[in-house]
Image 1 (cartoon, rainbow, N blue to C red):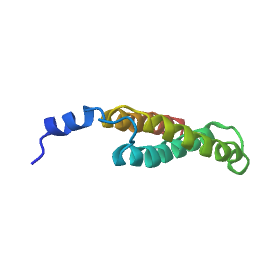
Image 2: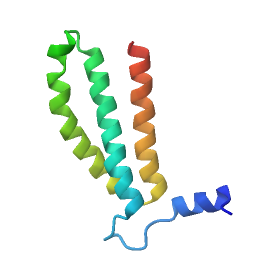
Image 3: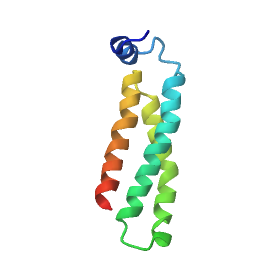
Image 4: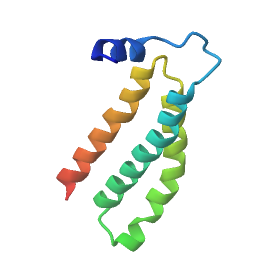
Length: 102
């Protein structure tokens, strides 16, 4: 049975080899980068004072660049906990900004 202490120790332990990304960081980078990029695109769409049809062009161009940058930023983290925090913190911030902008 896993206790919270063992899970936390597993998350904060740095990878043995810096040459391998690992499955956890890879999945966090791919899906976390996608979630953060789409939340950023939604936020930018909500703050542009134009029709949605016209305002969608800039965020669509922004989305691929943001996804690539976020995925790279998440994948170079030293620990699994750092990768998880790099997904959760921007997601929570963008979600809150979207909530208060509507």
